[in-house]
Each structure stands twice: as structure tokens, then as C-alpha cells.
Length: 122
Image (cartoon, rainbow, N blue to C red; front, side, top):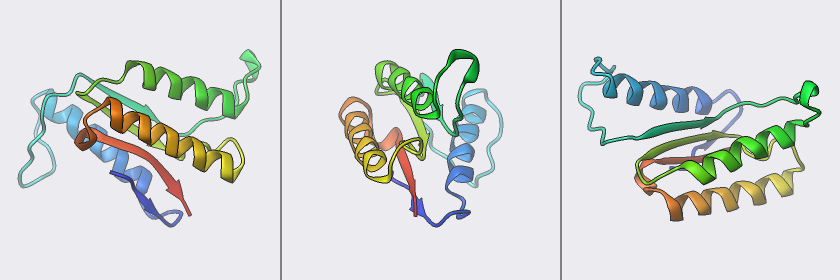
């Protein structure tokens, strides 16, 4: 699923809700839904928000790419992947190209129905 929409449109909130509902369901808790069908999930990966890491001398972009690389190497068909505004730490064109490549990789590697590729703000 690819989420798009205006700034302050609730995209990030929706993704956080998905992660929390899956986590609640897998721990046997009630979920805020009339009905829910949630298959097995081995891991929940998130890449939401980033800033530079001055102590490690890493830029916002480097932090973002390190986290993304970890997700791309460890996600499986049963993983939930939630990524928000991938490529935010670089130019618009480069960020869009990165988001496209990452989404394409995840769709090939994981179960497309369990994947929320990067959102793109307008």
C-alpha cells in the first residue's frame, strides 16, 4: 500500500496505528476494530522520522539510509514494513528515486499485502 496525501493529512498517524494494532493483536489484546484479520508477523520494521547524529558524525540522510539498509536486509515475507518520507534528507528528485527503488525492492522481497512502502508528502 502506498499512502499519499497533503501535509498533516494523517499518513504517519495511520502507519503508527497499523503497527500498534498488529502488535496488540499478536500479544492477544483487543484491537480497536469491529473485525480484524491479521496473519502471522515475524517482525515490525519502522523508519519514521530522522535527524542527524552529531555524536557519530552522521547526517540526516546517512542515518536514514543506514536504517533503511537494515530494514531491506532483514525484512521477510512475514514482516510489516512501515516507512515514512524516505529520502527526506536529500533533494526531491533523489528522494523520489530512492523511495521508488526501496518500494520496488520491498515488493519483490516481501509479501506486498503486508508492506506499507514509503509515503510521499506533497
